[in-house]
Structures are given as C-alpha cells and as structure tokens.
Length: 272
Image 1: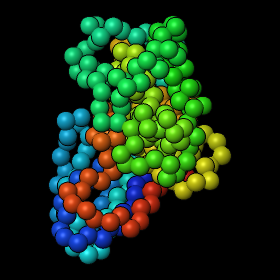
Image 2: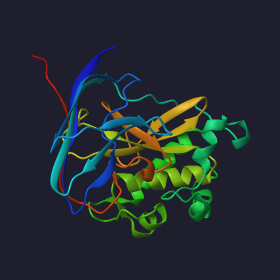
Image 3: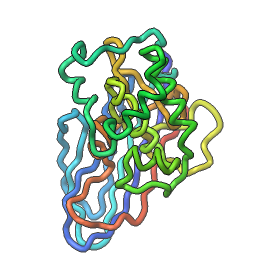
Image 4: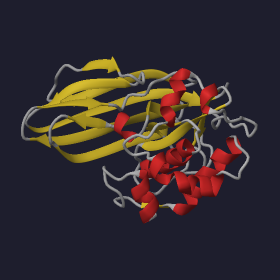
C-alpha cells in the first residue's frame, strides 16, 4: 500500500490565575492504517505528564497549567494511506434490535446531539429514502448545503438545534447536526476529531485547524462521513471518538484559564 508522511501537532499558550489541572487530547490514536513514527511533547515550564486511555480508548494526557503564563505543544511524524477513506453504497442499515451491544449508545441523545428535538425534521426529510449508505450521504449533503461555514458563528454551548436554526457553524457543528439526524432515524453515529491536511487539492486559505467528522455504523462496521467537506479525503489522522465534542475536547481544564493562542499543523513532509 502506498503511504504519505505527515507532520501533525499543535501549540497552546495559556494564562492561569491558579494551578489548573487539565486533560489534553491532541495525540493521534494510530492504527487503522496510520503509523506514528515519532512524537514529542514540549512543555514550558517543564513538568511530568501522565497518559491514560478514556472509556472510548482515546489517548489522554494529564497535566497542570501553572499560575501565570505557560505553554505546551505536541508534534508527531505519521504515515497514512495514500487513498481516501472507503465507501460502499450497498452498506445497509440495521434495526436497533440487531445492532451490537456496544453500538447502541450511539443512538442516544447527548449534550450537543439532540435527535429527540430534530426527530420530526429528520423523518420528514429522509424517511422516504432507501435506508443505507446512500441515505447517510443524503443527510451529509443536506447539512453541507444548509449550514454556512463561519468562524465565530457558534459558541462552546451551541447544540445541533441551535446551528440548524441559525444556519451557521464550524466543522463540529456540521458534524453534530448530521449525527443528530442519523440518530433520529435510528442510525448509530459517533463524533470524530483529528487532523486533516490539504492533500487532495488546493490548500484552504484559512489557518490550519483541528477537524471534526463522523463515523456511522452500517452493515458490520463504521464508515467515515464528513458533512463539512462533503467528500472523501486522504490523510485523516484520528485523535479521538465519542458521542459528541464534549467527549473529545482538545483541552478540558478544571478551572478557568485563558487560552492566549493556539496553532495547528497538519501537512505533508516531502522525502529527502
């Protein structure tokens, strides 16, 4: 299999009034065709960190943001398949009673994904369609067309209902809305967060950022869908999965530090 080599990572700078414990999720999971060649943390002032796996098997790092200014960064070199993610328009949906036990939780409402609030809309728009991969693709198309991407158009508390009403959002909002429609139709869907470099065409003029997309259970496996970009992409590097963004936050702080700046890298490294 042909592969491509990427540099991924991020840099975060904070100001805290008090020592603030935090959990950071920026390190890739690896596996599923992605190999982590080397990785490194940069923390100022230096401190010991602790890695653990959460209930979704995501890699999480614990640290304490000290009083005053501090920074931490992560960088890795990874290899990824030189091909977009799989697709199969014959992949079927299953009734809830036929789903694996560990998949059922991804039918339930969560903090940002509210199928009980948008159920009537989902059934009115999509119930007449043939169940399966094609119906999920139609959901992504609708979300992609309905929402306009705009930084600052939503807040950390905005739900799928909020952005559907406003018509604006960022990639996490596109994903939350598509997940909500899927769950309303009894299609298991989960939130995915990671790095997504520009390998398939002209580079996005906006600064590089983390990306969100979703995985949907059809047939006997999870399939990748991306309502924000609405096309298959090469180079996805998964950081974590969960019910929604509350399970896969870049930084969860147990206090009120101020994020002064953040930068993200995700680009191809040329050989030689």
